[in-house]
Length: 94
Image: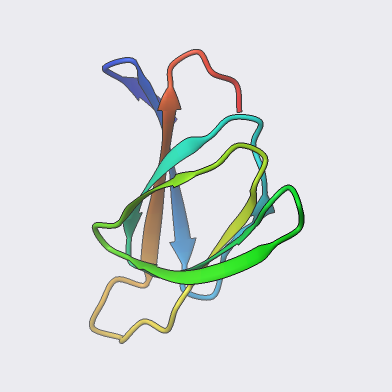
């Protein structure tokens, strides 16, 4: 984790056979994508939605929404570890 220009960053490296487990935070945060993932989110009212996200996508994960990132199949010519860079204002405890 690091801080830059008043923003905290946490870089999550995800191997092809791994995932970012289902979790939630008490504050909203941004996520920048490097790779191809299936993003699953569950609202506080238990409504589930899924979508594909890819390199270059930037999204906001709302506060208290459970979310998980699972890598989609990766051709062997691409790096086998992809990343999700989560960020939020400095001083906010997720």
